[in-house]
Amino acid sequence: MSEHVTGRRSVEGRVLKANNETTRVVSIEQLIPHRLYGRFLKRTVKVVAHDQQNASKVGDLVRLQECRPMSRTKRWRLIAILAKSSE
Image: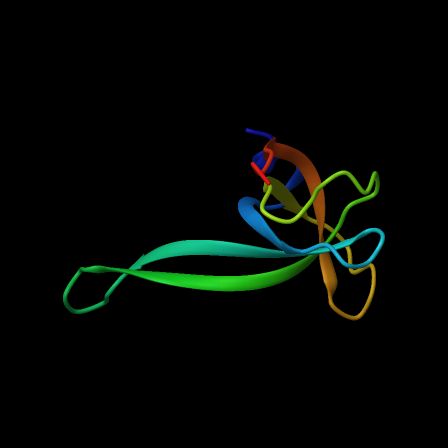
């Protein structure tokens, strides 16, 4: 519902890199049906996200939301940590 109010997409992904202080590299997996055969294909996209509180670690499941460009590659903002990693 909040997507229609704000007009911004929100997706879930897993944190791959947490080297910089407020920047995270997050992997987003999508299941896309094949246009001819209908079988689902797994597509993975890596995006760079902004983590203001520096709270997420590698392996965490997080929710991201689109935002204005913060740098050359950063166009997503971390909204919530859905599950912590067991490491």
